[in-house]
Image (cartoon, rainbow, N blue to C red; front, side, top):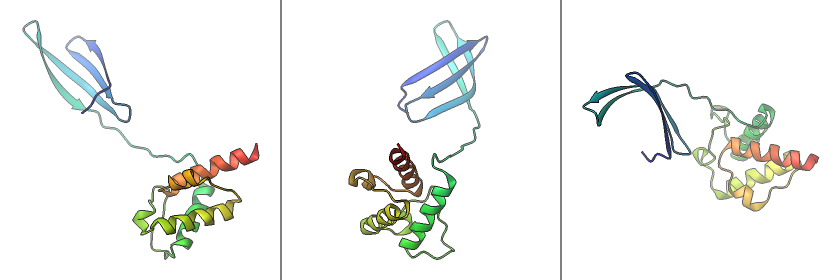
Length: 140
């Protein structure tokens, strides 16, 4: 585990510990500290149970439209689940399919995506967020 920063808060015989490396935060509920002599310490780590919540910055209407366009461009039936987290490659899309999806999105939303940005889109969420960004820029 590469660690960029560690913070310790000492209390009598107990410490709390948080480790971060820029992309992950590892939280530990409590750390028991046992002193063995004066210079050696032994730690018992107990992980903190956390809930993971994923949220998309784009509006749900935009995500729904992107899902519909992806479904249409890839000729997916209604049984195939398409959500914000869905990756185009997981749906069987190749680079040509992705270009067609981008063209469909541009037409539907009346926007134009720069080729560099369009090439970075891999998920429905990324497409929806880029569309929201372009629509905001267009409104200015």
